[in-house]
Length: 384
Image (cartoon, rainbow, N blue to C red; front, top):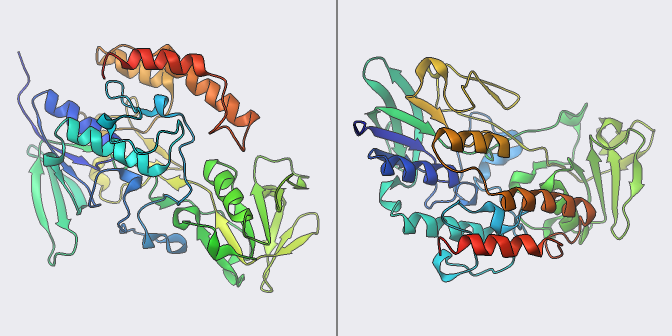
């Protein structure tokens, strides 16, 4: 016997929100998707987002995408299982590279939304202000159209699905003395292009994908770029070949000073113009109150059953897209009577990770897994 149709609120129209909306409607439910930006895409959106805190002025932009950004995974791995991310007219492709620019990802998500007729479900430029539980009734969702006066409107839904992503609330490193340091601080969230850093000395904190990309980008115009990496050995202080770029251990930063110096533990120092925090993001659900029953501590959301449901209010509140592991994806697919993630996809992810370590400067344009690309292409024929 089919389940009763429910009216559901989905927060966010990025990849997770679009997939959730499609599956909920397939099950006969009536999802309403709230998206603060003017278009689908999650991090690809460019409208400012209101924050409870605003580290380093990050609220100036909602998007965390810089001009030169390309994916750090091959497009074959990234696509939805039954809507491949291929360079074709069906996905509105304009960038056929295997590791395309961020605009291509946005075009793909827009094509997905059109293909499955999801746009009519989305309330664009609408911010979710708060969500509260109404015992015995459902969940009251207060929302407001951007630019409109007043307190917005409140509607009651049977359940809420949270898909607001992880790239909005910047995480910032703690550096002794930085409050009195006279230079400019910023987060990678605000970075767009290298030209403003012409002839400057820049310290980048972090060594993840954004730090690697941005440091190389800025090194093309800056006087010096210094990377502080917490995973580097404590004694690290070395110039990188081919760049005006130095690598230090984050453990080596002792303090900053009022004269603009950043002092390392070995006694050396650099008079820097900019400190850029490429330090990732914090999980943030500002619209949820204590009645959601969850807490967030260092990006751990508790208590959730299998990273989806808070046990006390399940299944009326759920979170989509928190874990990152294939093992988890396979378990979840099994619970939903879907096949596991394809083996070629797992192998391609592993091959790409290995290639990135071996060719950090060129992995997006040189690779050794063409046999997996062929296997993926054959698999995609089922859906194209």
